[in-house]
Image (tube, rainbow, N blue to C red; front, top):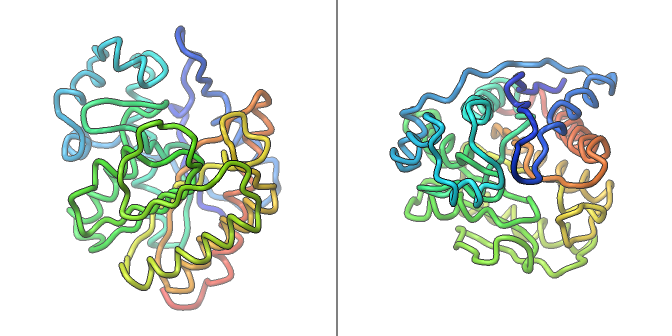
Length: 305
């Protein structure tokens, strides 16, 4: 059973400036519904403003909430921050929060958007407005829902915003495994960064992941995992430089969930990146990713956790 978080506000009109399109988020849900797999959809509440201000600059949050984001910041984000976008990002951030709560109950749950790992303290960037991973990790600890949160970021692009926003904390561990030569040009320092060479294939990728992730679990001992499950390491991704196949992405996702669930730990995924001229093809990659993770998690039902 896949427990997936989705909201109508995840869709937004195509921006009047910039190249980003929001239609893949609806296409992901269409692919999931047409898969025939067991699934329950959950609608999130919008993220409270105070939770966002606990991580982001209050002045920047005010700009987003009032639709007064400066043009230079909008250029960094990649699209104008309209009223629709404000509602969208409040719900996508709330979606990651709800996915974690569902994961605590069911072992695994997915947010069908978000993974906005480029947003920084006082600015958005790279199609990201607010950083749901950092906001939710902070709130989990503030609410006493977790003591130590591990953020696993396997998007092809480094999770620079997440790294910067959590850099001084010893209760949040950021692990980013990404393309060395890909965006952003200026990297931040995660708790652990693994920079991969262009063209890395399934075998090389999985060897590195299998080497690093168990060591992080052993040394950091998290009690909750947030997983940025971008599918842009795929060989056919428009903005990726790696060479993972469909099978490689599935191996990756199953491995991450298995490492969490065999330790009895809840894991929630956020959609992350995935880019191509055929939006339906990209959406189907995201849908297969979530279904594979739900299938892997189901193997551990009735065990510890």
